[in-house]
Amino acid sequence: MHYGEIFAGVERVFKWPFAPLAKFKVGIYVVGSAANQFRNPVQFKIGVTSWDRIRNKWR
Image (cartoon, rainbow, N blue to C red; front, side, top):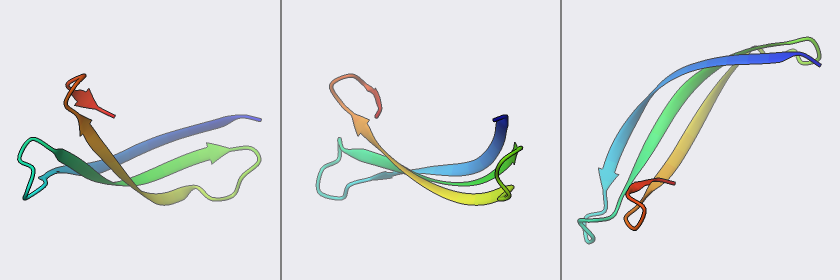
């Protein structure tokens, strides 16, 4: 099977109103794929990621 995909999207960071050090980001993406087995070339995806304060990076 051969598969490849490319995506583009936007992300926005939000802060929790009652915990100013906690934050998360929401992303909306358009994904295009090419494969020899599948027939769904364009998809929309949503991602949610939280901030890890201890490691100082997105999880």
